[in-house]
View 1 (cartoon, rainbow over the protein chains, first blue to last red):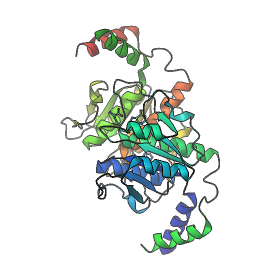
View 2 (view 1 turned 180 degrees about the vertical axis):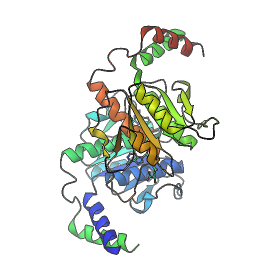
View 3 (view 1 turned 30 degrees about the vertical axis):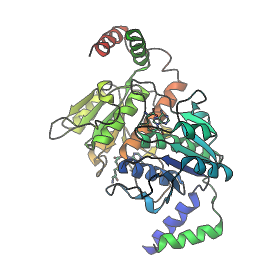
View 4 (view 1 turned 30 degrees about the horizontal axis):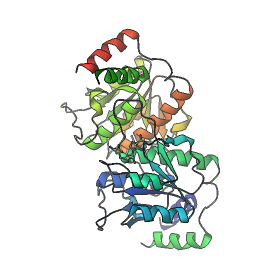
Length: 191
Length: 191
Ligand SMILES: C[S@@+](CC[C@H](N)C(=O)[O-])C[C@H]1O[C@@H](n2cnc3c(N)ncnc32)[C@H](O)[C@@H]1O
Ligand SMILES: C[S@@+](CC[C@H](N)C(=O)[O-])C[C@H]1O[C@@H](n2cnc3c(N)ncnc32)[C@H](O)[C@@H]1O
């Protein structure tokens, strides 16, 4: 039992993608947050970021598989400094935002260090954040309704990233340092 | 204004895919139902099906873009006769279900008439329904959590179908009969 769990943890950690993450700009519905973290976990994103302007911790949906244990969510107060910080770390920040410069989400190279910026249920990504992002991307909409649910949009893009990274062999060898892998194995085994 | 609306309706109807649909087996959370119908609308699915054993109409999430106007949801009482009926109409029914015969969702040909069968939030697709389906498909999970949110899974598969159908040129020419196109244009313009 313990052995099986250790093996699962080691396998999952060896698939983790430290260069794939999301930044949620005031996404606030618990079921959306939970669904996004589950998708992050499924494609191997190691952590997630959220802008929570008034501080406080986001709440999750208790009934769904709780991924927040496996994909830590880091909260920040201001979106622009957070974007700039990620860019300094080498991430391309892709804002999901319909603008003149928006491209189809499938045209982007997700094997590069990538952060997907997603917007609030009502308001979407702010104009300032969309401008600060390296690129604006959009999932094609061929129907009457203007936008997708935010957790649906997140997953659609994350699984395109997963597809590209699989083709590129990025799940074949561990992407995290041996020492980090060891530390996390221990932390996950004895929470 | 009226002219712009007419044009939008005509464009959307000319992209509709009468041979792409979903069957929801007791999916009951309003936000999931709404999110799934929005994704259906976005990829051009013309209608959706749901199993509602105790009768009654499913409820939607009023706050999200209401796609149920554009993607009628047909309710049925029993899952097996509904699957068989779809198969008689020429649909391949793909159950999202982890079984011995399950294949990666990207290995399937979605240019064929296709119905994606999705399961309840808690219980998933029933064993009987999974057996009656033509194939079982699964989205790869590389993390600690066992399953995705159902609306997330639906969208991930629907956008793979959209991708394949786009490559195959199925959005280039209207897929519905001229007479149906005319009737629906009128119905959508004067609801
Ligand atoms: C419900 S939408 C926001 C709607 C808002 N009225 C707008 O126009 O931006 C919430 C979030 O879902 C994501 N989203 C929804 N539809 C999308 C699409 N077609 N492409 C990319 N992202 C999308 C974006 O992150 C968006 O900020
Ligand atoms: C939360 S899941 C059901 C979980 C249930 N405990 C089970 O094991 O089936 C609800 C539905 O989402 C869909 N789903 C979730 N994860 C999926 C995956 N990895 N591949 C395909 N469909 C999935 C399926 O339609 C499933 O019935």
